[in-house]
Length: 95
Image (cartoon, rainbow, N blue to C red):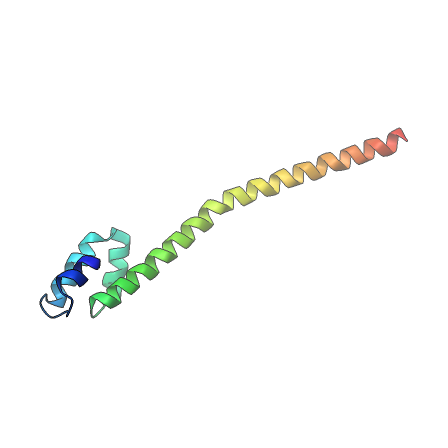
């Protein structure tokens, strides 16, 4: 995007379809597919759509990565709770 702004600051020298085509080729395939589905009119729109798609994928990736950790934490808490209950029962039996 920065290179495009430097090469064509007035956005008049390079045709839009060429810029969009080059931009799509530089993206990850999954983001390029989403961008192709939306069919943006200009590079600014394409850039915004690609950023939105990327943020969405990163958000989902974070959620997927957190789920096993949350489950592990929950299992550890349940195990600690059971141990505390056993200690409490043993303490009562001793007294």
